[in-house]
Amino acid sequence: MSSRSKKRAYVETYGCQMNISDGELMEGILEGRGYRIVDAPEDADVVLVNTCAIRDHAEKRVLGRVAQLNGLRRERPGMVLGVTGCMAQRMGEALLEQAPYVDLVMGPDGYRGLPEALARLDADVPIVERPRGKKRGPQLAVLQLDMDENYQGLEQRRTEGPTAWVPIQRGCDHRCTYCIVPYVRGGEKNRSAVEILDEVRALAEGGVSEVTLLGQTVNSYVWEAVSFPQLLRRVAQVDGIRRVRYTSPHPNDVTPELVAVMAEEPAVCEHLHLPAQAGNDRTLKRMLRRYTVESLLQKIDMVRAAMPDIALSTDIIVAFPGETDEEFRDTLDLMRGVRFDDAFTYKYSPRDGTPATRLPEGDFIDPDVAQTRLEELINVSRAIQAEINESEVGRVEEVLIEGAGRDEGQVRGRTGRNKVVVFDGSAERIGEYTEVVLERTTGATFSGAEVDAKVAVSM
Ligand code: SF4
Image (tube, rainbow, N blue to C red; front, side, top):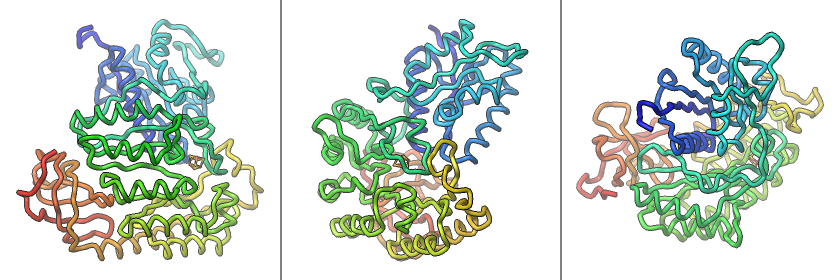
């Protein structure tokens, strides 16, 4: 097919890194079947909005965007508008009713069949009965969860650069009571270690030097006899791979073996994102997180004993139903006690179908109280982050140049400890590692200067 006659597809992704990776996967699948991937919906025959269901706010935003894209669809007869991802799975056919201009809804286990689904729409095969009186083309819903689908054998279409995300696991076997993920992505499915290692080797040969292994509870990964720590060690030893990260681990699977691999393998970065979610045992129990504050602190002690300089980040949810003010203060105490380098903070967002929505009505926290708690948590977390980063001014760190800085003549990179640094340099040097002295901090990020541009090591 000539590039002029190729169908053109545009994928717009919202949400977490796993979803961004899924967006790349859909692009890879479509490209492999003759589609040309374009950068703007105006240029596309197929527009897919790849969605997140983790909170209500994200879904509302996507519905607004889909309505906006319908304007484009009206101007361009034949354009297919699809909604994929977790929100598509969660809402299913209700989404086709609510947004009747959407042609396709497809959950995360359907992507392998995406070209066939588009072909069915092209062939005008109606799959979903439309509400009476609606005169328009066929609509298709692909919502089957598939316990075996781990996307083995399919290739992502990655944007060029020195870093790459490598999904190693899909779905989740936990049932945290606030979380929609197990219902929209199904149970845990792990990819073959052989295939993951082949993919990492190919990435390294193509110039990638930093990979991040991705999974919903990434450190519970196991494939045949290969555990996550074993996989991590093998990935860290691939020629050309200089940095390995992973996200997001579950605290219960932070084992002495995993910590030993992190400490022993020079390529494994000194950064751990450890979602704590709360600092109170009663709240953790109601969230069904399956650990206590004490056991979480023991894990953190174990990690810090092996890697005293490790940077820690976390996720926290405030105003979970039933959280008292005292229990919220316990979470602040956890933040002050552990001193995370960074924290992603959220207000509890009820998701239909999750167990927490069935808690007694009186347990749900007043929105103003929830907002106040969130702001207090953010203030505490930012103050700690600023103190930590201030204490790191003057350090010399190895930085991987990842992109151009905001200002002309500047570049942006990250340290192994996941700190963002901006310094003078040319964007032509993206992909290089260099030593940078951290000179100033805004609280969250650093500006610095190369120790000696001549010692910069090319990839
Ligand atoms: S571990 Fe809990 S929060 Fe994480 S994806 Fe699974 S159910 Fe959701």
